[in-house]
Every structure is written in C-alpha cells, then in structure tokens.
Image (cartoon, rainbow, N blue to C red; front, side):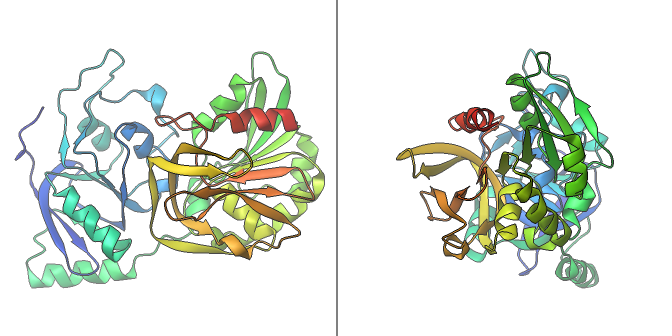
Length: 365
C-alpha cells in the first residue's frame, strides 16, 4: 500500500470556512473548484477521465483508490477535466495484470492536484448536509490569515462556466464499425468513450461532431440516428445548443439522449432544470422504469435535473424516476422519435442493467 503520512502537508478549504487536513499526491499547488463526492467502489479511472467532472474537486467516498492501477484502455476521454482529486488512501503499488502504472504518476502526468489522508467520510457528510460548495486543495497554510483571505476570495468568485465549450471536440471525427448497419451522429457535449463503444458494438459507425454543430450539418451527414451525449455544467447555459435541438427535433431522425443530452432536449421542449443539493454521482443509484415496472441499478454523474412537472403533457412524459428522491431520470417524447435518460446506460465501470436502452435505440433506427 502506502505510508498514510507520505507527501507534503496539504489542506482542503471550503467556502463555509471548513478546513480538512491531508497530504499531497499528484501535482502540488492550489486547485479551486466545486467540491462534490462520488460513491463508486470501482471505476476511478473512468471518474478521472469523465469530462462531466469539469471544474470540480472530486471526493471518492470509497476509502482505498488505485489498487488496480491505471490502464489507457479504460479511459473515457482523451484527457482529465476535473480540477482536483480527494481520497482517503491511495495505493502506490497496484496489482493487476492490465496495470500500466499507478494513480499518483497518472495525476502528475495530467497536472492534477490531489490530496490523500483526508477524512472523506466527514467531508462527504458536510457536502450532503450543507450542499455542494466551492473549495480548494492547497499546499499553502490555510491557517495563516493572509493566505486564508486570499484563497477565500478565489473560492467565492469561482464559477463553472463555458463547460461544454471547454470539453467538446474541435472538429468531426469518424469511427467506423466493422460491420456497419447504421450511421449515428454523436453530438459531443463531453461524451464518454463508452457511449461510442456501445454503439460500435452494435454495428454503428459513429460520427462525433462538436456540440454547436448546426441542424443543417446534421442533415448533410444524413445519419440513421442522433446521440446526445453526457457533459458538464449548467444545461441552461447552452442557449445555442438548445436552439439547435429544436430544429434537430424536426429532422425526423431517431434521437437518444444521455445525462446532459437528456437535460438539453428537455429544455428545448419547454421543460426546466434545477440544481440539486449535492447531485447524484456513483454507480449505485436505483431508477424505476415506469413502462417496465422495474427498478434498475444505474451509474450517474450529474448535479442538475429536469423538474418533473415542468415538461408540457402534450410533449412527453417522465419515463424513469430516481427511487431515492423521485427526481426525473428519463423522458419519452410523444410527437417525435426520441427518448432520453439522466443516468448512464453505457456505464463502465458500473452496472450494465440498463444497456437495453442501446438496443431500443437500434430498434428505433
């Protein structure tokens, strides 16, 4: 494993003045961001490389991270978009036949500031009780009044902005299926690569396009289906994308939306979204599929949700509910071929209970 006291002394300072002590790993320095927690017992590689964590300080609630190392095959994107990483304990000497390195070196390589030996249970309870708040990870002495004031100014002024613009691709990219049955245009709001893998596994050639791709360009591509991906930030911020989706909706092409894609399509159809107190981030969220009358365990990563009764009745209905807090987890639309979900049916690592939705998308095409 590791010495629990290895690394320089480091601190977490939250917007409410709370201080947590720990030790540095990864890069040293100061990282400002929105403090959140993720409950997955595995899948830390996927968490680190998920663009949906853009601008956030991610706390892993599971106490040991890094025991099977890192492997590039498991990454969900080409980079790391979170601002900082918080764990109780990390493993310096991972053991797995697929291991290509340890998590400390991974963080250093991707310029991510991390902190370990933190009381992550206390930190998680703080976020659950108070709600998501800004904070920082730093090697500076936060007990020094001048340092404390300087950091608090940065923390209180921080805001996650231009999230989708910061993570979307800059140009189109084509991924060809070996036995092509369909062509799918994937709007990249910060997509997880396993969405692409699940489509290709089902015979779909995937054309990944930037988030602001016009309806006219989508029509030129002439796809059999359109995938709206996951992504970070406040969905209502993406006004141009929402306007584009209103026109894309009228192309009469089957649409499947996941996470942010789900929220954006809802906004394009008259619904409203709200920020949750502390969000849903982890691989153990129970979701009721109303049509099937079954509850599935899902992987999730979001801080916003569609308000249940804000969708006009003539447009669609809420097809999935979160069994814990009854928030909206899916919508089926009535006048055009589209369904969307808040959770991640492509989950990796995580439960595969809802992968049937990809098969439904194939049937729709």
